[in-house]
Amino acid sequence: MDALNRWAFPFILTLLAVALWQSSAFQEIAAGVALFLFGMLSLEKGFKALSGGVLQQWLQRSTDRIWKSLSVGVVTTTLMQSSSLVSVLSISFISAGLIPLAAGLGIVFGANLGTTTGAWLIAVFGLKIKLSAYALPLLVFGIALQFQHRRRWQNIGHILTGIGFIFFGIHLMKQGFSAYESLLMLDGIDSQQWLSRLLFVAVGILATVIMQSSHATLVLILTALSNGQIDYEAALAVAIGANVGTTITALIGAMGANNAGRQLAAGHLLFNLVTGLLALLLLPWLLALTEWLAQWLGLPADSDTLKLALFHTLFNLLGVVLMTPWIHRLASLLQRWIVAKEADIKRPRYLNEAALASPASALHVSQRETLRLYRFCRDTMIHALGWRSSDFRLQHSLINAAEVSDAEQQHQHLQQAYEHRLKPVYSAIVEFLIQARSHAGIAQEEQLRRVRSAGFHLLEAIKGVKHLLDNLTHYLHQGPVAMTASYQSLRTQIAATLTLLDQALEKHDSDDLQLLLQRQHLQLQRFNDDFDQQLELLIQQRQINAAMATSLMTDKSYCLHVCKRLLMAVEFLSLPATTGDPDWSLNDEDYRQLARDGQEER
Figure 1 (spheres, one colour):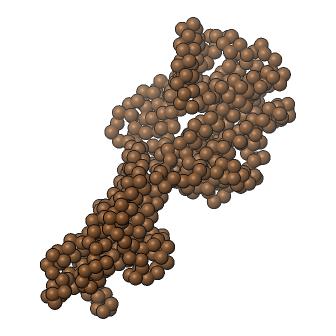
Figure 2 (cartoon, rainbow, N blue to C red; figure 1 turned 135 degrees about the horizontal axis):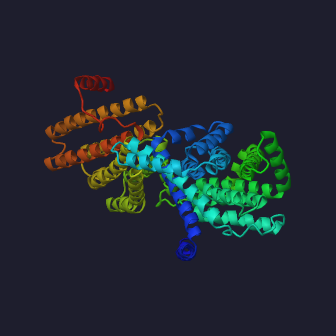
Figure 3 (cartoon, helix red, strand yellow; figure 1 turned 90 degrees about the horizontal axis):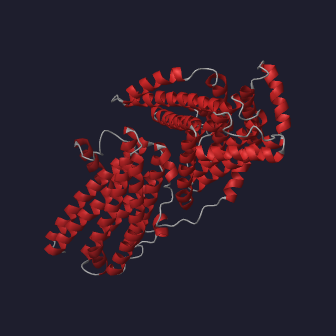
């Protein structure tokens, strides 16, 4: 694809430069298309930012019923006049796992129907009203608002500027077509022949692929039709091609998506191909139905532009009616046809470029990937401390399980896991979060920062285990019985913290999770106090010497460092953002509770 762009793009620019040099009328049309596309981008940017996540929440919530998915696709595309934005957001949510594939297909099908309203707006108003009279004031107010400091006013400015450029672009295209009667040179081709119809469909596909906007193609068709450069049936065939061409945008958006995003893009492509093929095969009957409905609606007999908008709506509605009952079966087929490649543990599983289109999706996939990093870290710690993962998960005799083996071997395994498994995934998370934060709002940016902090604390916990290993491995195999028991208690404390965190991550209520984490922190404080008392007792009874006591004090700090880092990682990852970082300080009531718990345990 990149190689094609490197060769095709300069070639297209060269042809465009020659055409612009040769014809002043073509300059007006090309400038009109450029302004129209720029207006669409500005309008899309303004709506996306101004929604403040409302659009994304609406899309995400419309998943329990197919008719809701269809309705949201129709309404959002009608309001924003951008099926591309709705398609890209749908791919983003699918890639993040926020909505199921069937719901995503419903949204995309509805977006196809919603995009037909653009043809109606242009046919009813755009070709009959002098839009330039409205374009200039909109541009003036839009640019003025963009210089304001408040983001809301800036976003409204983007919307007004977008509408202004769209209006001005349509005005320039109308002037260009009226000044250059023979530009398209398609009016002499017999549109009754099948080969000619296929040619017109290809023209619609090519124009939409080049401009990446079916709206721009429809404006060209409608203006050409109103000025007589193309006949009515040829315009219908070009409109069919424009509909098929919109799938290229979805396919491009799916290139950075995961397997689920590619499945949705394939479903979008299949819908448009089936709809376009049916419209082409049923063209004579659709023409008759269009004429009958035009008469019933009271449209003028010579209103070909309005009939084109009506035809565009009819064949998209036909596709929705025929394919909606098969959405769930289509989703199952796509999931069987497009199968994910075997995951590489060194690479992120959930992060993908498509999720960056929505801050909500970016946050969701980064949280899932960091949870995956937590599981990697947990298994690495369990192995380093001498347990098998299966025994650990089943709570099989944590104290008397397999002993830690040779220190050098354990260090080597831990370092390999850090370098080849943990660090690459964490680096990918950091890179992804940096990109996501550049498009996020203040609240979402804080959540993304917390996810990054969670990953940092996990890797710091791994480093703490690495420091603990030397003495732990030595004294679990040799040395005084008191030292072996002390290091066994350090080892067990980390295991108990990991076990509790596994349970905490299964809780869905944030209050219950907060309480569980606070209790575990209090337990760590009690463990610290009890360990210090036991250490003093061992020294007094001369069961250990001063050097051993120093080693125990240092390694106790490493143990607490590991446990606290793990607690902070889960807190940052699972709890909503508050006014600041977690406050684990103890008050008098906390200490009284610790004393009561300690007495009960004794």
